[in-house]
Image (tube, rainbow, N blue to C red):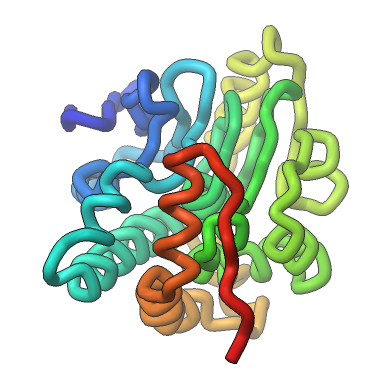
Length: 263
């Protein structure tokens, strides 16, 4: 068990929970490192049939920790720090995405910004009907570069563009309509739906499921891993602009940002 995550092996199911409910499970660099470590432990076991990724409390994940981002912005080596953050986030997404068995995102509440990326790294997305999705990065002067490859892979460029460019909140029903969610259930039935899905998964062959996951990725004609790697630079560079600094300051100061025009 880490400081910001909890890993429980329940017979043949790994349950990895973001455990920072008081901060809506916002992602610190240490949280992402814990995810990478936990997934490596899970990957090394031959008895695991599925992974369930969830968040403690009322939110799934609020994205990156803005207080930590503010510290990065004022650091003397801020550019290097941005790149380290992008690298560890990429590592976390890639580690979940490449697991050889089915993975379930149990979205019990809001999934925002970087939290959407964690959802998209999973094969199956079950959403409580009170949950919502949002990519507000442009409202903060930055981009959701690391989320983009997985979002396009899961829902296609059209739906991805709407979510990426508008910054609007998507309800669970809207997420279901575009394919971001696979099932939306009442809050009171949420755990039961996850359990039933796990039963269905475990009735299949481990070998067949592993081959199916690999085949699915190849059939997409998109090298998602290569795209994630390329997106690290875009993510880091976007955080170095004057609008990125202004967006973060404005959000923390609860005021409207003043954007600079394109040169």
